[in-house]
Image 1 (cartoon, rainbow, N blue to C red):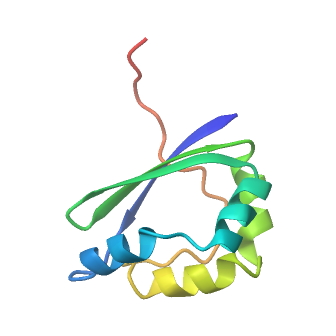
Image 2: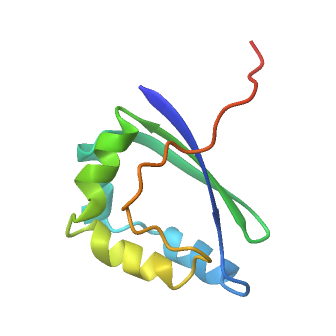
Length: 103
């Protein structure tokens, strides 16, 4: 199991839209995320900054599985309207590197 931290940024003025849209995640997207190995996904917001914590079997495999998934493509199109830098799933990112953890 991997724990991946991510940082994304909203376009100014889109905070309420982002929270409203995330109030209900489409059931087909929920199923696609779980099938791709996601066990948990949390998002916190501080102003325009979004911080994600993802617990997933294999982050890179999840990204590949969702890149062209029919439930994820429209969701990413919707998110692209809200995010400062849309995620096109073309990279091989590994999230934010962990610096320290309280043992």
